[in-house]
Length: 250
Image 1: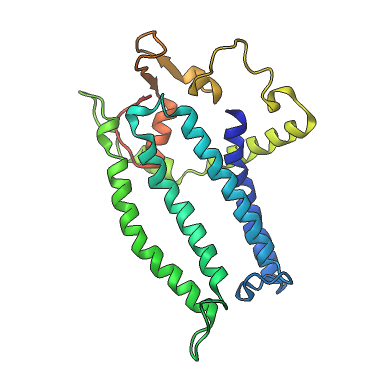
Image 2 (image 1 turned 120 degrees about the horizontal axis):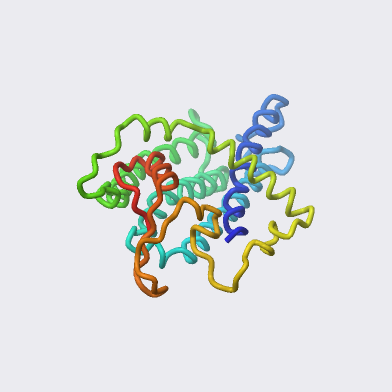
């Protein structure tokens, strides 16, 4: 689970660095996005790094879903996963395909370059797709799952602040860097050793080091439906996802 977590968070580091590198390359006139996948310019290498990074992150998310699907079954994790990740995954690979078609299938006209046409088609497709994705997200993230009977709904200000507060973004970058430094130094916990004291299967809480935020309130059987109550963790997710009201999570 530790490896899965950081296979996703590496994108938090690499994507901003690729953007900064792109800005620098553009300043020195070596980016040349309009040149497509020309090996003489930096754009093709930045696209390749971005492609590999997002692919690794998406693979990690698929593995994460496989490991936690049983614990999150009643929260429809697959619907939530696809409603968010399809936007990132589909639009990214779509833009990659349109760029690859420049000069091959998409050709310049008297008024538009191949890059202009490619970018325009990509933007048009995204505008249409966002309508479908918004409907899917509305269905997947219903607030009914987060309501506690008799409890007042969450006020707007805390979720709003959580949605614009990027301190967690900075913390994850610092934490990611620390993990990779420890990994290359050979620290045992960074290689998946020394963090478990028993042979039992770790839960979602223990694997992601949030044990203190969870209290088990369901039956004791491992095969029964376990309910986990979280305050800080789920409230934080509700703020980012626009949910309101409840602190129940699987």
